[in-house]
Image (tube, rainbow, N blue to C red; front, side):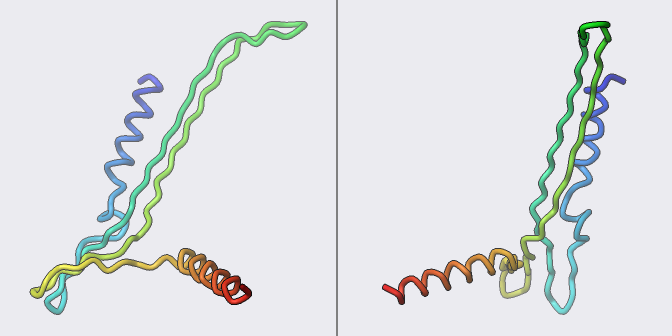
Length: 115
C-alpha cells in the first residue's frame, strides 16, 4: 500500500468515527423529554514525503523523508430538547467566553464612567 492510500485509509476511519454519538453518546429519553447532544467536530490531517540527494562537500547521500499527523476535536455546543410542547436548543455556555465578555463589559463600564 502506498503512502497516500494509507493516509486516506486512516483519515476515512477517523472521520467516520468522529461524530457526536461516538463522543457524547445516544439521545436520552426520560420524563417525556428527549435530549439530543450537539457538538462541533473538527478534523485536521497533514502528511508529507520527500526524497532527493543531499550534497555535501565530502560525500553525497541519498535523502528521504516522510511524516504525517492528524487530530480530531469535539466541543459540546448544547442539547436539543424535544417535548410534546415543542423543540428548543439549550446551549452549553463556554466559561472562557463568559469571562472575556465580562472583562470587556467591566472595562467598557470603567472607561465610560471615567469619561
